[in-house]
Figure 1 (cartoon, rainbow, N blue to C red):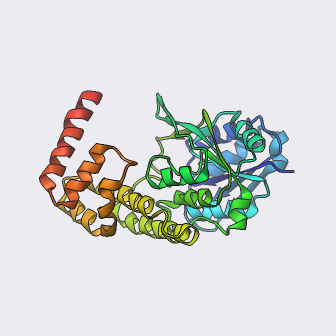
Figure 2 (cartoon, rainbow, N blue to C red):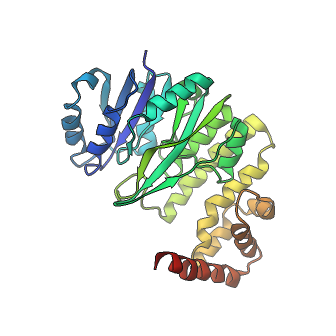
Figure 3 (spheres, one colour):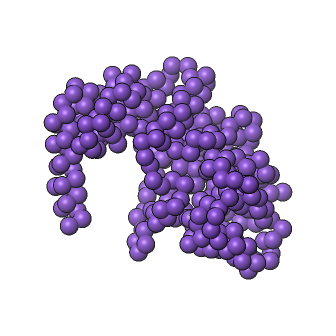
Length: 326
């Protein structure tokens, strides 16, 4: 019986793949299958992958490597892995990151003990020479966690969560192919159909912020359409399952998605903020998920008090960050 299927998309990660694979092959949990999806990576990533796994002959029978003929993007790579998975639970690991050896065992044992559909944990934000511990919030029900994700309080990253595979298959949930930016909003759908969720107050996953070639890097304005597409999927799904009960939280998700437009002095970015999800603006002062400062900045934007927005940016970027990082 396969307990956990680990899905690892691979694209331009030759600098990182060996450390990632070593950490996965060193997992203390037995009965794990590893599915590596080569998304037509043009570098030496697959060569290095094969070289690395030869060091672990005891794992050979539990490893699957599948290749796309052409680059299809991160959501497609994740879906390819899901289609091949046979484990009771699914774990996604990005190939430029790495994990502690007891991660899968700890999360799986917790899931078994608590009969949980989803287990999540803390994580590390890893830089070249330092790491930052990223504490995650704790909730006792899936609805509480769902609202927190929509409000931006809890991250919907896929890689710090162990998910029962049946949540995907029974509810026909998959990743949005062709719309990579914001593809991890799929986790919101999984929490929406989960019966029991559990938080583990420990960090095992190391999210590496070094790879400029990674799927998640290099956001630009044309990615906005992708984000809006994925928000539409979430909104439609939640309305089908909850009716209007989550209208506030959905509006908060839209406000959070467009907030980065306000962290600029470019008038076009202000215009983009105004034109994106204007229906959400009436919820600004009701959004208790964010700080008073962020709420005030959005209110100023809603009132077209752009000088106040620019003043905020100057204070935050020049004064606050200047004191912290000088």
